[in-house]
Length: 366
Image (cartoon, rainbow, N blue to C red; front, side, top):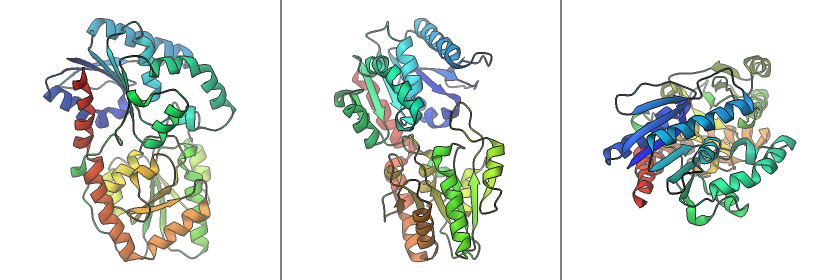
């Protein structure tokens, strides 16, 4: 069969293993790549939405048109789009093709369903009917990355259980991460790897760092992550410099060698309340064999079992976050046991080859 993938260039690495597995199974693979241009010796890659002059609704309409043109030209048996946004757009583009199998990986419900405030409420009301039609249409399969998202979309009647599948996360290449046991460093690194979006909990991390510094904790609190575009809640570089001006935490900017940085960190902290599937940073922290402090929130609790490989804290609670960090910093044996369990969890559930196998099995149902 011919499979047409639609995904953003930022998801290139996490999607490639699925495409490779599909090809090894004998499928013809074509990739519609959004917001980027990658070369590949294995697949045909068609750049989409490369014009930077169109913004907002004009850009969205152009992308829908481009995907529709690509479908007409390629005539795929299966269309597989990644993220709720691109699944919705691809569903509109594919609407005339009733017999084509549509698969949408809903890698988190994002701002639309997990964001608070008037804007997200209005947007949901506007999109309610068309989104429901696209997601519940015949010959459509929805892949959810955590049980909370699946249950919510079924409860709200955007999805049916019959066309929904749970596959935990996008996976991680385990061999890129070498788990190195932490020690009782006199000046440990407490690391928050993240995209710069308010709902990731960056202000909570900075406040927790301030609280612990005032308690006399001698540690380096670091935030690793570059600027994010196309998100209404993104944090600019100027805002980050202002947020970290107090000196409690340091912003490192974009870090290219994340495995190396994770190996140097004593503890990973991710106080997110964002609407994501399973955060990639937590998958990587597990692969690196690190104990984790994160929130008891959809997606985050899929990667951390409280007391097993980390601690879960309430969202937007800097004091609870600080207490959890303090507990693990001062209990080396507990932290080491959690580090072993993090790597074990990654090997059991988050290996990218396991994810690719589960995903490509969906193609064989046609």
